[in-house]
Length: 71
Image 1 (cartoon, rainbow, N blue to C red):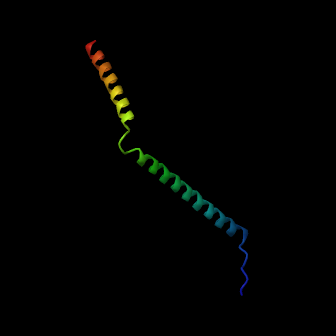
Image 2 (cartoon, helix red, strand yellow; image 1 turned 180 degrees about the vertical axis):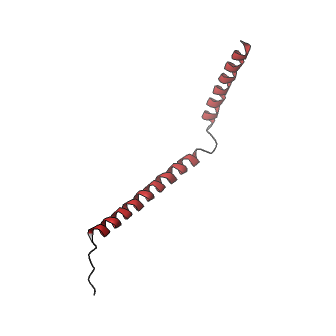
Image 3 (cartoon, rainbow, N blue to C red; image 1 turned 90 degrees about the vertical axis):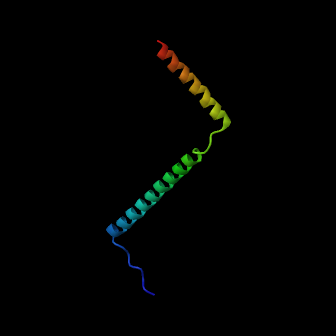
């Protein structure tokens, strides 16, 4: 069986750097996918408590706008 030849240090460094870059890119891609997945979960319908809170805030804003228009 043929013996493995040892790579020169500069070739080994190039390979190590390439592998580290691929690992970093894969990690960034995975983080991006997780962020997108997390945002996608919130797209669905809100809970009834959230809807009621939004209605209250909307009424308060409408009241403020009416008061400013009356001035």
